[in-house]
Image (cartoon, rainbow, N blue to C red; front, side, top):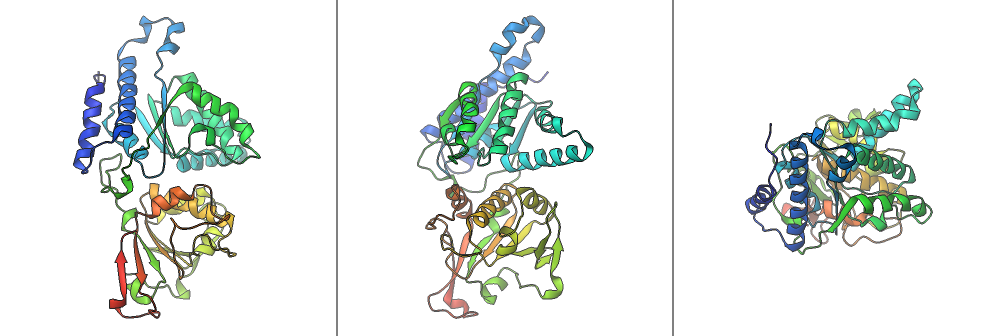
Length: 390
């Protein structure tokens, strides 16, 4: 039998990973890590004691409380959770918000075809919670009332099965599903979150975006996304420096990742697609996940300047762009963004931008910027261009 994890040993492992990456946990990060280690130790102890020693009425009392980590972007919520996940032995699962809903919607569509759609959601939730003692749920956010209903089902089933959750979010529970048209519908679920979870804020001054790439859950360094660039205005010299050459019409293709067709400029070693095609149509998060699984390097050109109104930069298009960046970041796909105007995500303003643009700006700050010098014509000299960190 695997020995129960000790709280001190779990914490020592997290601190060692931080030291190896060149930093020390700040006060709020350390407090969050200690709370997770308490959870890990409690899970280990509950599994180490034979359940037959306890009458059923006592078992539910021994279920460790779930943990909800929230705070500003770039403050290490996912890092702390992932480090805890790597230290924790035993049966566990980590899932990203978008990947969870991709699988959920796929299961619902499949069940609808077979006529069993009434149980499809429960079957998907059951599969997610099967054979584990802890579920880690990254980037927890709710902007759609339908997804809110799925979340409510997940929480209820996790409580019934006594599976504690570790959740990271940029929002405190009260700010989930912020749309005033739907927020009241989610208030009962917010109450459930508060009842079953300890709410822990991570609000330190360290920006984890500036730290070296952390290893993934398999122990391998995840730096594919960081190898991307934000390129403006996208001269041939700028693109060629990274082995990128605009595809000729003969390479244009139409892909169908799930249900909607997508016109792309190339789909080989590199997926090359225009912002208007990728974000201006009817693509969904499920489409982006399917494409990310097949293409490990993306070029999105024609990206409009954030906050400047245009047909390509509508609110719906920017929300799809936000979803795509979330997927590519989590799947560690190398991303090149190309636009003629300034692509300054931190300075972007406007009603068209999604409410979670701060998180997307955090993601994209990991990409170095390649910009042309002032007054440089297209295809200018190398000396007039620079590469700088964002």
